[in-house]
Length: 474
Image (cartoon, rainbow, N blue to C red):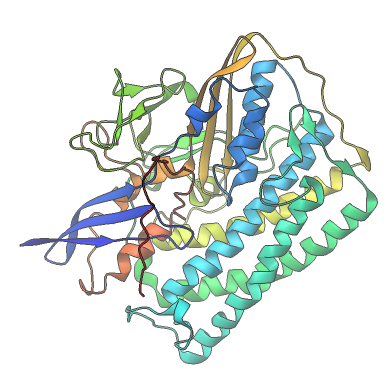
């Protein structure tokens, strides 16, 4: 006999996501990832001045706001026919890398560690009814201390970003044709000092801690495997003199079984909406074709997250995909491999930031000149902390006429495809055996390995209706 288990909220960043699984004989036989917020930024941007997109789209998310400003800027530069200055590109990629560091340190310690390490029982924030904590007390207590030690390091990564971006989150540095920032010797010296401290922590604390979790929870190398299809839009790539420092746009189908790594063709990207709360004359479309309307009364739908596809297949994106596609890490594809890859990527990003910092020349970074076109289109594709991020724009009468955004969460947490096949994280859950159905710790650990963040959305406001407040008791 089957039963349903519902977990809500599932993330430790913000809510707005529910996981529903069907279990039979302690094994998950079906799963649904439910995004419960409507995204409306595409509609807000229609009719606005094109450059507004850089600062408006940053507000999609306070966690990866730098990535949205970068994707919007790349899309605008393609539409305007502008190449950024090389010093401007070094600085804005440096800012983007700082966001990677801040996110990865925080994700590992504030979001991953509480799933595997027993936190102090007298602190209500850390109450849990899970019992699967395996670390010896002495080892457990060391990582608990590292949890608190990581907080100022994560903050320091944002401080790095703010040195060039003015503030974090929602920087003011990334802009058309380069950046608004100037480089000075004081900033470079300060960056070197902070990076040295963060690098020591990643190398001597974070990576060993991840290894400890892997040794005590080896069974998590066996679950959360998913489809094994990996995708990246590329990042820190194609510099005129430096070449590619990390990963170029690429995909691999069934990577763990030896699927070849090949160049990504963005023209093969589609979205499907049969199982999501949207309606349109098309149920499958390319990013430039249409913006479907929200419709929460749609029969059979269960999520505001659409189903993104490449070549009609579901793909995983994020640190493990980038590490695999770039050849940095290829132990396997699983829950634990995602956690390990994220930590190893923090080390890689730290190395890249040192290279970029070494290229910076004190003085204004400059901006390439530009004129607003009457009509144009552009796409801004980049990888960010959680995976592949894309912005697609059309300009008519010198105003934004069309704006499409596909976030990393749409790739990883997508709803069923039109043919009924599960999305990426749904597929990773199916087949998992639960040790204790009343305390299904496996579900949270698998889903959080994707670093779910569903705040890239906005609330819908209904006039004359009072908001509903719900108190969640641990």
